[in-house]
Structures are given as structure tokens and as C-alpha cells.
Length: 399
Image 1 (cartoon, rainbow, N blue to C red):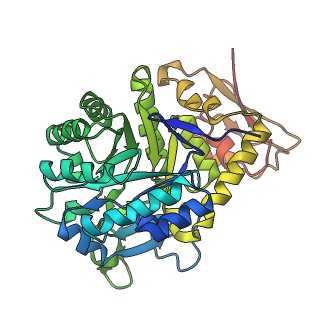
Image 2: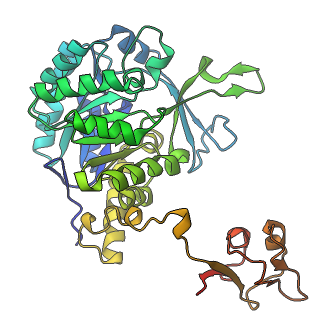
Image 3: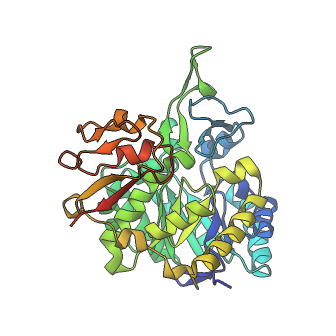
């Protein structure tokens, strides 16, 4: 049986699937449900000293959108968008900390880990919240420099407003890391000029891990009413964004592999397949949120079970065996080998789809099957991608 456990910043987590900081971890009651479902850990809803961010949560709006960016209305596709307005933890610290303590005690007897999360509006506040959260017994602390909602609340400098101010973020990270005795991870926004540079600065300031990444800010009009969906701009994420998140995980692992940076991947993980993709890209743990909000807490446990089954089928004894292997095999554009397309005439249905997808005059029509002019084919793979007949087209390396 495969070993799903992972070492993350010196903390052993029984499996890499963690419930992200969001409504499913809003309080002790919700966190216990995540743990009971089988999650290796939970990240608490971000505790804040901002009354504005707490009040905003009482007016949260969520919509799950289909590929047309319309409300899914029960038919939620795999590549849906989570479009929402929300805030941080509902309660002030003095009321929320007991909830965290309850969850920590529950996790301790159920082989799970509770990770703290904080977000302040002042440097002093970050330090105070960090110390308070550490006292609950959490073994790890996530600083939320990525929440998109403060950007839409003038005068509230937390979340991505911190993550986009590199100098201020460095100072906060340094002071928090000096104030606590547990590993600190930084949740970043993707809306910066260079996450590679920013990650290096955060590590220099003392952070042991980065969470890649929080949601973007989006805007969706309702074409029937002419009004914006849920009243205006909102946080935008979900499974559709996976390739963008994986790119950042790839880049951070590739650039900082020698420094042994720990990576938590989030924003885009829908199921166990995505967990594998995140880990093959370099994420040590994978935070899941939007799919849990659609399908319920039991979704977490189902994905853990399917991950274990896949590992057994593939012969992986531990998650470390496939951690980062895709990124480590990643080639630059100039390093790609030459390829050509080949047609299996017996499987070709002569539908002509490949002819429309070829812009190099390589695909040619035939009486019973299409064929390839090798002088023109560059092996782009367009024909392979649109062919409906399995095995009719193959792309292979040429010597």
C-alpha cells in the first residue's frame, strides 16, 4: 500500500490533500468535517484584525460559472470558475482563537494537521496575530498576502495589497518569522510582476514555504440584464486556472530547487488527477477549496482514496517518488526535439478535421485516409489534438 505522507517544513502530514483557507474551514465545526472526510490537514479561515474584512464575510456572494461564464445552475462543469466576494474570518481574534484551539485538539487525535492563517492591516498587527495563532498549537502558519478582496476596499491594506508591495511584504515576513517559533508560509497573489523574484525575497526574510497562488480579480457582466454579476468585480479562480497555477509551481521549483523551498499549491485543484499534476509540478501539499464547496466535504476523502489507488496501480511507494518529476523533465523551447505526424490509415475515418487544423500544408486529403507531406510537417500536433479517431494520428520524435 502506498505511503501518502509528506514532510512539509518539518511537519509530517498524512496525505498531501489539505482543505484551503475558505468557507469550508470557517470555524471548528467545518474544520472537523474536513478532517473527518479524510483531509491530511486544514488551513483555518484567515484570522484578521480588520473589522471591514470580517464584516464583508457576512455579505459573501458566490457563483459557480460554466464555460460561458454564466451561473451553472446545478450543471457545474469540471472546468468551472469560482466567482465570489468574501472576506476573512467572521469573528475577531479573541472569539476565533478558541475555534482554532478546538480544531487543533480534534486534529491531534485524528492524525491531521491544522495550519494557522492570518491577515492584518498593520505590521504590528501581523506580529500580534502570528503570536496569538502560534499559541493555539498550530505547527505551521500561513500569512495571507494573496486575498483579492482588499483590493476592492480602499484603505484596507491586507491580502494582495501586501503581496503587491514587495518591500512591505518583506518587512512583515521578517518580523513575523522572528516573532514565532513555527515555520511560516506565505500565500501570494498571482497579480505581481515576478513571483520568482518575490519568492526569493520572502525566503531571504525567513519564510520556509510559499502558497501558489490565490485568486485573480475578475469582472463578469450579465448580458441579459446589462448589470455586473454579484454587483461588480470579484475574486476569480477554480479548476479553469490550473495551468496558470502549475506554471508558477514549475517556475518556483525550477528556480529554487537548490534552496529546498516548500511549495503549497492551490487554485485549480479539482480532483485526485489535479493533485498528481500539482505534485509532479513541485507542490508538496495541495490545497483544495472550490470543488469542496460544490460537492461537499466527502469530496476530500474520495480524492485521497483515488490518489492512493492510482499510486498503487503505478507502483509508486510514496508521494516523494513523483514529486516535481514533470518540472525536472521540463525543456526550454530551444531544447525541444524535432517531431513529425504519422497517420494510421486503418484507423483514419477521413473526416477531414486534421486538414482544417493544419496551417503548414502538411496534411493532405486522400481517397480513403488523409496523409502527411513530411517536407512540410513540423510536428506541431494540431492535427493530433482535433482527430476524433483514437490512434489514427501519432506524433513522434524524428532522428
